[in-house]
Image 1 (cartoon, rainbow, N blue to C red):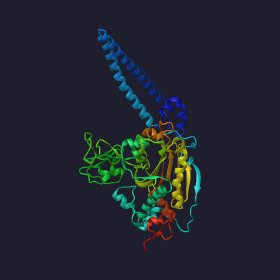
Image 2: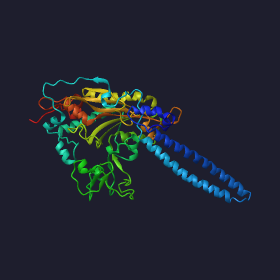
Image 3: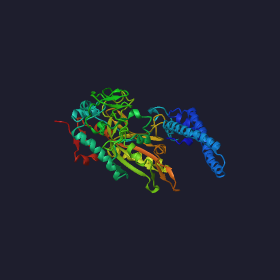
Length: 488
């Protein structure tokens, strides 16, 4: 969230910088809210001062034995007006907060101007794509021929945009994640985190997913003390409905009798708003969200905290499954594992001093690149232009890996500096050199997306006979296995 003082001091300059995203800041709307806030706040302060004066005058009059009925009546009228104004001021403050929650971050001055991914600027390219002396296959055909990647079974079990891996390929997927965690914890100084996969709305607001991107999230609501959809607990007399229609429409899953509903068009369980907590300790009034990235739970570790200066920077790494509805991606990357509703990712998060956050961004991006270098996968790094950046980011580098099956570089990591944008939402602070609380800067990036790394390994290390060579760096995690061999 932007500092409202920035808008109060020079809203036209902020509007020009946001226009590069492009985002049309509602200047008139903000100024109208601000004018009402000033008017109500000024009158509220006047009445608060008057209330104190009335109390003093009434006390003095009583001590002299004077009639205070007129003063009491006047005081009552003032207190009544004050009570109404305080409610009105609270409403105006909420409107201001809601306004600010809908405004994206201001791009850093080093971010290139542009409107589409075509305007992104390549920073460096590492490694050269391999030349094959046979017809290159994509990961879908490679996995299917091995009998180890089964999209049909995944669709039967869950729906479209899910995958099922078997045998050595599933082990390779696990090995990739373990390799990433070991590199980041043992060589880059990150502390490994195991975090909840379900979070509350406050956590989603803190990192910027709410309120703007709720349609991209899977929601879960406790029902009868169970989180049916998240815990795989059989539902009784339950059903699935979404704002985009039934779950069998959105997820290709046959509908059963159910009571599962979600305003975001995704799976959720029906609940009674009068029920507070079940015997599981879950608050039945709360809507929970499946995490779209470990960024959410890990960054929220510092929500409402004041970190001692000598503990900065905080560096966390976390491997989790991630869940995304991919709303708005209809028709995009429908083949294979590139765009899934469920996928694994190793996430890097840093909480640092504002003066060091851009230095930290370069380091974090380098940490993610290390994985690709160790796996000997060709890649490039691009700076996202103003029109291609995420809502909360001030600057973002995308790392794109070469996929022979697509004959293209595809994103495998986004590394971003959010400056104080997330920290202001979360009130994540540190105690500065003067001993005063100050907003920290937050950064994160994938280190890397596990499924896409698997895709890159399969396609770059494919053999003419249909097998896959295991990269040298991963062999210790595969029990010394040097290749995944095709069936004889």
